[in-house]
Length: 120
Ligand code: SF4
Image (tube, rainbow, N blue to C red; front, side, top):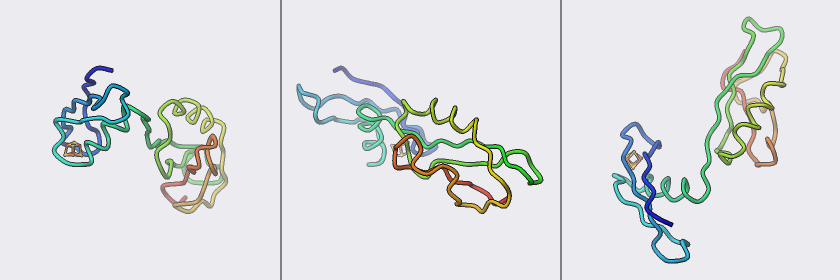
């Protein structure tokens, strides 16, 4: 495995990272270019198991708007993002919904829930 260049997206500074294996079996990694430990953690995770928090909206009935904002309450594997977004397309909730209410429990078996990010 060779050196992988990436931009840290943990904070707005956007440090340019270089991540490379620290041994032949690529079981450990070295990160350079990070200004804080969170960047090192992000760099290794991005290379070995990239994940993302999803923010989106779902349809809502009987409310003053047609859609309510939602997000995952944790990061899910990047490879499941598309399927998760497709699932959200078919969801419709009924007002009243409170901020933090679970809209989908354990989405795609990830152990992560989709929750409302505002009351409506
Ligand atoms: S390495 Fe640290 S300071 Fe740099 S972008 Fe990532 S979180 Fe921000």
